[in-house]
Length: 317
Image (cartoon, rainbow, N blue to C red; front, side, top):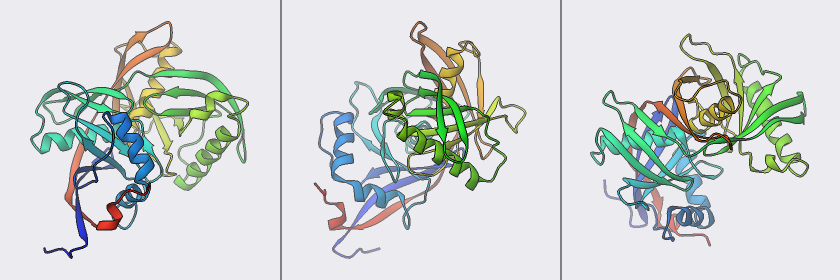
């Protein structure tokens, strides 16, 4: 197809991990400034806000879509660098997105079965392509930042939960336990109310200032799972997958409480019924820092070109 002279292509591969979409950008995105992936992340956030949103929202994308922008690696021997973003924010890390990226790189012949490294703004992560097609992700060091943080939540009342980091920072609501059998719209309203309460309480409780995801926990519906979650992302969309960074944050809390031993499996069910399997090893037991590992699967569903006018690809600042 011949394009009009003012149109340009951004090449993408779309996949889903446990139902959560990832759009890997393989070519055509404007060159970012910066010698490291962290510097390029800041440049992407500062100069390309409209282009970022245009890649993931309608009419080209969808509400829950996360994009993954590939770039040159920082670390010797790394397969690539990757910067994740959704319609609201540039993300430090994305577990389901990393699994989607690895599956995409493998399908493109850029990596094979075995262990590899990806550089992200949150740090270098080790990934493994398993022979059965699944991906094992060695996530960034994770830990609980605070236990039993109490909030007064409009429409809900007093809610207590843990604040934990697993690549993103989560408020994991533990008391009272929210009924996850309620309609998704109700769960979204509850999670958004908790999100607002975190922001409003951040002055009195500074640990809440970093919270950008809300995780509601409940009993599983699948016999082979240990728990089920509902995760609200910064964009306002809910995570269709069990959320890799959210599962890492949950496992960090379990480890801190002595409820999950190092090396034991934790199977996390998403609100849609998909599963991730997690384990961990200790990095610093005294400080509660763990090295979580997440295993999941992805499937490629499309590849093609997104079309933009030339001026839409220009930086805004």
